[in-house]
Length: 107
Image 1 (cartoon, helix red, strand yellow):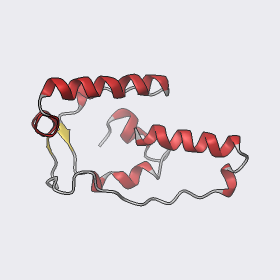
Image 2 (cartoon, rainbow, N blue to C red):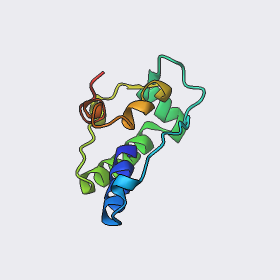
Image 3 (tube, rainbow, N blue to C red):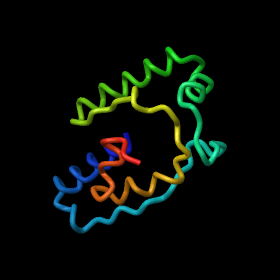
């Protein structure tokens, strides 16, 4: 959803006529500071974090629907592992150069 938030910010700056006079600075925020460097099985991680797998899937559906509204497609069936985000988060702010990583699941 961070990609969606970035798009909304860019649209708001553009609408305010400030898109080219503003600078976005990446400030990392570790959502899962105890995540192993190699990541973790997604089903195990999210079941533990959110109580059970069914609840996790319901949350994924909410995010999927929000993505549809923003013109994004999420395919959580393709995600087998929750990664350690510190390796990937900076790529988001380098988009569109790394856009395919987020939109196509490229590694």
